[in-house]
Amino acid sequence: MQKRVAAIHDISCFGKCSLTVALPIISAAGIECAGIPTAVLSTHTGGFSGYTFRDLTDDIMPVASHWKKEGITFDAVYTGYLGSVEQIDLVCDAVDTFGNDKTLLIVDPVMADHGKLYAGFPENFPKEMVRLCAKADIITPNITEAAFMTDMPYMASPHSKEYIETLIMKLREFASGKIVLTGVCFKEGEIGVACLEGENIEYVFTPLVDAAYHGTGDVFTSTLTCGILKDKSLSESALIAAKFTAGCIKLTKEEYPEMKYGVNFEAQIPSLLKLLEII
Image (cartoon, rainbow, N blue to C red; front, side, top):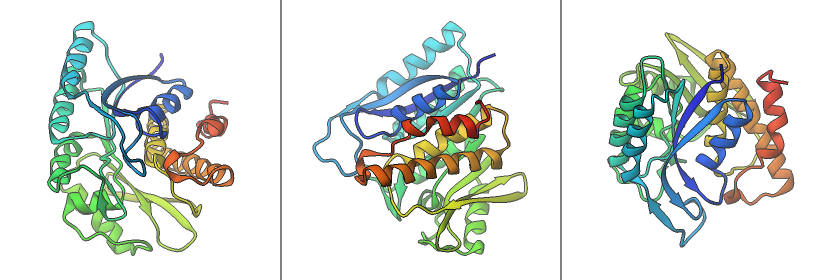
């Protein structure tokens, strides 16, 4: 039977992130992807100025309630960029409304990178995000987001193994599910993730592509979600997601280096299907 995911993200009409990444990637894997848009923006907020913003906070619970009324169920709920503390509260309520004990909650706590909160987020936002992460079965913070949620200092790469594992154990204090910490770098030339499942931490790495683009975190977690729903293990799913994301970055760097436009994941969809062993 076809799996079904509810993706709760904003729609940035241009810029390849959030729902405009999650919907095509998850759908390409043969998984149905329904969406609850939290806001509609003309572009994402990184690198563009004068963008439009339409807040859809008031629509979150009516959508969730309608789904419940219709008896629509989901194998997973995948949350990304949430624009306010109120939206965090509503997403918690929405998941309780239409989810059940078999629904996986995958939370990407999108709010910060490179040691700084994204534009528009208040200083207390990471602590509020902790509540949603505490409900999750899987969380996928980057180093900055993990540091902010745990009150640990942010450290740029290369990282020590002690720092990464201390960070993960601090996350474990409130996150009882599985943890996928992204942006881990122990030495020059490689980038990867640390996966905590049970008491074991596994690392997966790919060669570092010397380029940075907006939306790659959404590409990663969307792909990870596909792997999990295709019955891959956490570390297998993380490796697939890391390889696919790296391939998208490499191709985009060769074609078009403008970081704010996002990555050309569309051209890499065939490689995604091979990684997931669909073709």
